[in-house]
Amino acid sequence: MLIIVLFVALIVSVMWILGAWLGPKNRSAVKQEPFECGVEPFETPGDRIDVKYYLVAILFVIFDIDLAFLFPWAVVFRDVGALALVSMMVFVGILAIAFWYVWKKGALRWQ
Image 1 (spheres, rainbow, N blue to C red):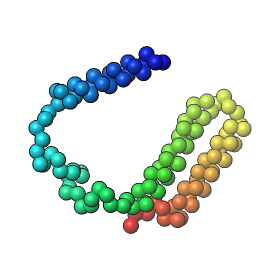
Image 2 (image 1 turned 180 degrees about the horizontal axis):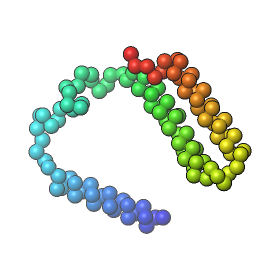
Image 3 (image 1 turned 120 degrees about the vertical axis):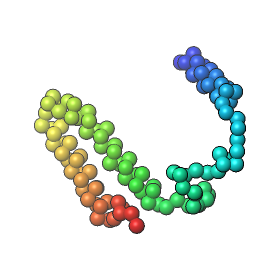
């Protein structure tokens, strides 16, 4: 384990040094400006971020994690039996209720 860590540290160090040594060094005022999708930035980086971004991120994680359960279940669906089918239907039902609740609360609506 120690050999792997040392090997990785060596590779990272070599890449970092080569990047600093071989990389372009011509800096200009235009290159140092903040860039945001081809548009001039309209907010400073220190401003507060709207809670909607965090809410959408959390909802994405919650509803995306179900794939970690659904995919392996679907792979072995024929071998697991009726109890696994019932338990997965309960799981999908709870996800559907959660999605309906989020939809009715307006958490997916941008304003």
